[in-house]
Image (cartoon, rainbow, N blue to C red; front, side):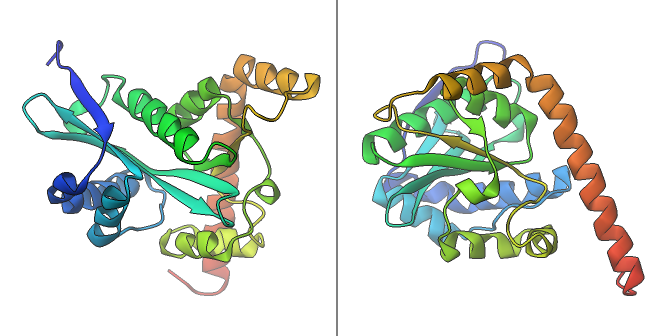
Length: 226
């Protein structure tokens, strides 16, 4: 296993046989983390593959190892790289970083003028995003496309998002601005500061989760919800 290598490529219709395995692993991974993700059906994953808006990782023997897909919102003004998942047996190989880089490249090729954003609860994903040029932003900087936010309804933390009027939740919002837009000194300073202080940011993120989840528990007990 130490010398394992992967083939990472745009997914096509021939990879649709892995769709159910991918969605099952997405659900199990979310449960294990104790957080939620927008649930996707195997049919939806197959559609992304056929549209050429997904990246899949396989071993040289053809075993599924990882996956991620693209979603466009606000008439293509915003793009999200969603559903990043790595099969449990292939974690700790740096595969998530490789998949993220490939889906990012695919997004830039298909949507060169779009802002690329993500919502994540994972410190590892935040680190990878920062390497690609993302910076943390407020939820107000993301798309206002209602279809995107409807996708959060299957998340176990949706009530928190709703109570915050879609302006905050357990996830951290991160945004990449197209290179066509000239970086300002302020933008460059913010990216540099974020990379330097990412560990501090991770601690702040854990504290935010702790506070919000405890507020949720308190609210549920107050209203007799168990």
